[in-house]
Image 1 (cartoon, rainbow, N blue to C red):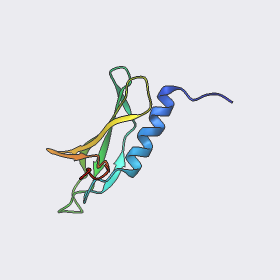
Image 2 (cartoon, helix red, strand yellow; image 1 turned 60 degrees about the vertical axis):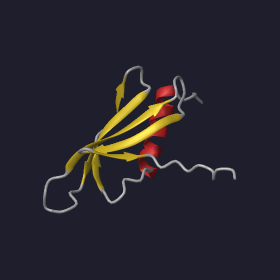
Image 3 (cartoon, rainbow, N blue to C red; image 1 turned 135 degrees about the horizontal axis):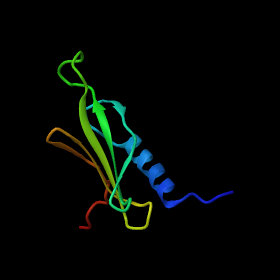
Image 4 (spheres, one colour; image 1 turned 90 degrees about the vertical axis):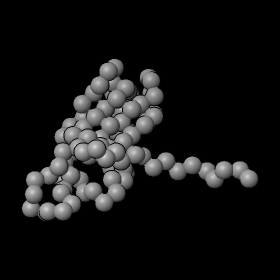
Length: 98
């Protein structure tokens, strides 16, 4: 049995994050593969969204980006972009102490 490489673990983590990501009312129609930026600490893919106002119109092109902690498959940040809108990752945090 072989151990997965860091890039394989990052791709799996990025795929999971993308699958669970909340794009609000925007609906994903299709995606391209991952592109790696820098030293592989950032991955971006093109995302094609269904048009909200006219279902017969062409899809709208956006992006989804995942940034990793250096030398780790742990995700530091994930967000989507469509036009000027940014879809931020909704991270649940514990309630503040009284």
